[in-house]
Structure formats: C-alpha cells, structure tokens
Image (cartoon, rainbow, N blue to C red; front, side):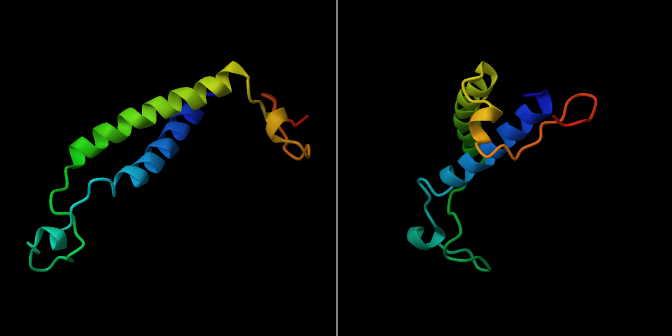
Length: 97
C-alpha cells in the first residue's frame, strides 16, 4: 500500500467513524425546549465540532492502524480477496499479469 492509498483509507475510515459518532450524546433544540427561530427542532443544541473531530480522529487512527498493519503484514493479500481470479494487477511497466 502506497502513501496515497494509506491516506484514502484513513479518509474513508474517518468519515465512517464520523457518521457513527455524530448522533452519540446528541441533544436537540427540541429536547432542550429552546428552538432558535428559523431552525428545525432537531438541530443540535450544543454542537462541539472541535471535540467531535478530535474523538473521531483518535478512533479512526486506531482503526486505521489495525487495518493498515494487517494489509502491510501480508496477512490479507489480493489472492485472498480475488477468489474468482478476476482482478488484474498492473505491474510498474503498465501491463497486467
């Protein structure tokens, strides 16, 4: 896995964790009883983006380390994932196997 692949993997994991973490401990304006005019009652009452981003980054880093370590160690290879032998792996010269 190259540097770009590692960054894309981290970004995908980060957004997946973000969508899991966002609804946790969410208090809406409707639940608080203080709906600001022009907003929905389901809008967050006390959203803290910096805290959320730090939590998401920490959890994503741990998950990414496990996934990337598994890929780099060779425990899971393309041969394990390509049981039907349909994926063509390009060599540096630009030709497939």
